[in-house]
Each structure stands twice: as structure tokens, then as C-alpha cells.
Image 1 (cartoon, rainbow, N blue to C red):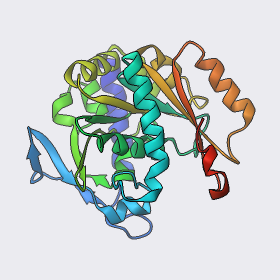
Image 2: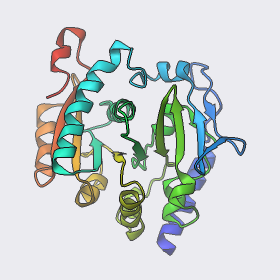
Image 3: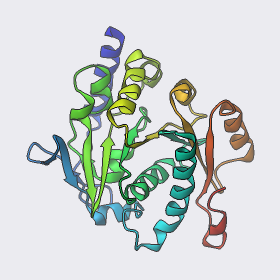
Length: 272
């Protein structure tokens, strides 16, 4: 536990040195969470800013938006596979950074959340370069994965209930750290994933993971994950990289490979 405590302290020091401001580079305001946030069953709740989500290409909370259709198609096949196999924890990864794995994870989570009686928990486990909180416009959240690992916060107190229109999404964010391998391999991480399973039995749990070829973090987590969604990108991901990822995942349940950043002419090949 002392090693975990030291790692989290270093992570917090990094966070304070690069604390995000209230506006992004385009001047778009981010939604703030504070002590006056609404409560839903003891969970902090905040309304997401639809204009901000638009700037981040997060669209699947709105079923009337035609851009949500590829995510809805992906949702149907992923959910069916998970239900058939009684899988509940889905990891989303990519060969390398920039493939759009976080965007896919968020849009997929919101698309699933639009289904009746299918709640979702979205967890940011890309500990070195977390993006979920920024992508959703959530700032000011003072609890997250690192606090849970250090036993400074509980899972229930760290979950944020984010709402986009009528869709509600449970989010567990994190702050960045350079010592992710130490944290990923700790017993506290195994306990956290087990608690997610037991505390959210009716939920699909989606983990936004680091790129699989960037570190050993994903490989260390694979035994605790039911299935994997691999996100590759046209013009960025090489066929050799995708094959290397598949070799790492050969003992895992690879539910789909998403081909991201395809041109409109090739949207029929969005995923396979």
C-alpha cells in the first residue's frame, strides 16, 4: 500500500502542475462539478453541455442524429455478443494513440445507455493519458480511480452520474500518472474491477484502456476483462500493428475490430 500511496502522490503532483482551465483551446466552456451538484441516489449528477459534446464529436446520446447510426450498429452487435456469452466488462483499446478509442468508447457507452433498462459505467483506465473527463467536459471532479486505489475514496463516492439530454451515464474518471504499470498491477486495481462487477451487476462496464502497443498496461489487465473492442484507424494503423495486437489478444475474447476515420465513401466498412 505504501507503494500505491507514493505513486498516487506523484500523480497528484503532476495533476496540479497541469491543472485544466475552465475553457478548452477553442474557448468552449467545460461543465463544472461542485459541491452544489444535484444528487441521484447519493451520486453526483451533472448535465453535460451539448455544444461542448459537439466539439468533441460525441453524438450518440441523440438517437435522431444520423451520425449516431454507426455507433448504434456497433452497439447492437457488441451487446448481443456480450449477452450471449454473459460478458459484462468490455475493454476498448487501440494499437497506438490517435485511433479514436476514447471517442468510440464514449459514443458506444451513450448509445448503449439509450436502450431501455441497460445502464452503463464508463471507466477511464488510460492512466497515463486519460481523456474521458475532458471529452465530456467534466472538470472539478476531486475523486477518481487514483483516490480509490489509495483508499482515499470509495467507488460509490467517485462515480459521476453524467446526463446528456435524457441519457444518463455513470462515469469513473481518473487523473494522469506516469507510474501506471505499478498501479495496474496492484491488488487494489483487481479489487476495484471486482467491486465494479459486484456493485453494478445490472450494468455493462466499459473500460477505456491505453493503446495496447504503448505499454504493458493492457496486457496486465486482460485476465480481468471479459472481452475487447479493438479500434484501428485508416491512414494511421498499420496492418502489422493490428496483427500484433491480435497476437497479444489471442487468449482474450476479441468482440469486434472497429475501423475508424474512414471516408464517407467507405462508411459501410466502419467496422468488421
